[in-house]
Length: 128
Image (cartoon, rainbow, N blue to C red; front, side):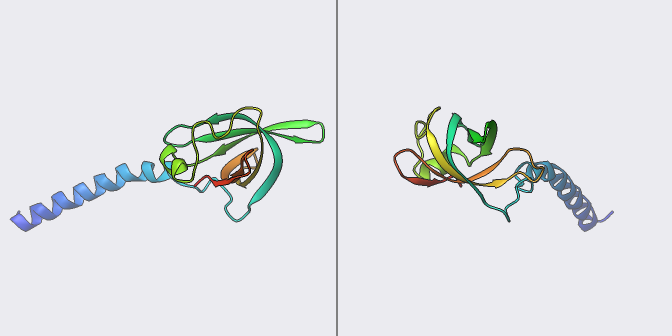
């Protein structure tokens, strides 16, 4: 096999390996599970938990509708991105009443991707 042919075979192999490794990473960072065509809002929900962590932070809230309380898990961006938007580790705490907008999960379960949150001091913060 000539030198050019060997290089082409090696390049094709490296490219195929790269594609195989990249596919799971792309799936992990996909937002396909969220319905980004529908933005929902909930007012005066109660913060149950705030996880200010990497690679994604989470806000867990209790939503009261009638006599039923439902827990929503809302995904946010990384700590670094949240800090750039004005968040701190103690921006919200359990028991705080907040207003939220979010993109719901496509599977209909309670939760989604947090879009914005109005915190107790009156600021509205982005989560991405």
